[in-house]
Amino acid sequence: MKVVVSVGGSVLAPDLAADRVAAYGDVLVDLAADHEVAAVVGGGRVAREYIDAARQLGGNEIELDQLGIGVTRLNARLLGAAMEGPVKPPEEYDGAAEALRRDGLVVMGGVVPGQTTDAVAAALAEYVEADLLVYATSVPGVFDADPNEDPDAERYDRLPAAELVELVASGGSLGSAGSNAPIDLLAAKLVQRSGTRTLVLDGEDPDRVRGAVRDGDYDGTEIVPDGEVDP
Image (cartoon, rainbow, N blue to C red; front, top):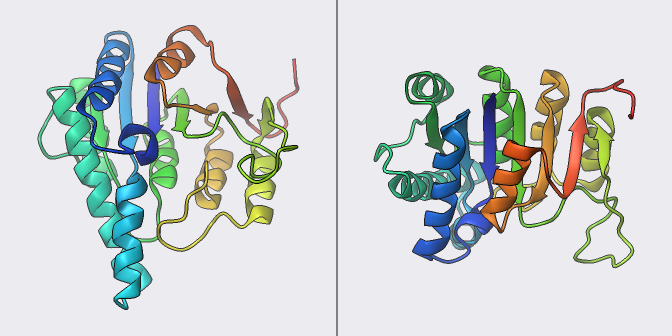
């Protein structure tokens, strides 16, 4: 099975704790023994701090995106070091796909301005024809409202891709550089277009990613292709 795992920066490195990064590296290496695994790493808190500071200094959104991409690539290097992988992660899709074919395991960060690592993961999954895309985020799935602000927010267990697009679009989570949402609008549209089976789950414990990929055991939201009938 070919798997793409999107690891949020706030999940991997809310602070620079080597043991947390090592735990994620161990899980990805373990999964790569049986599957082809590509990981896309976000920027998290550090990226947002750089972006906020640069915005106050008058940076435009492209410049801010470039700062964020730089942080995602630093995080990818850190995770790659935990996996004894290449020092420099691929910076575009062709390189990532080639590394995946060659090594069965690759880690990368952002690619171009205007595209979050959510979207990078969805695009890479489509490009390599992945069987499964996993979003390891700081929230346990997709909700009908922000669970941090609305105590009555309800989680979707299973959601057609078209409904995900509508939900994200109505919530306005396609924001400026540094916006923080479980999955953004471009990523949702790419998931819909590709029809890739997608899971959104709480990834703070990397063993949850292992269970989702290896055993199909997860507590989160499954995004299914449009028109797929509920079992």
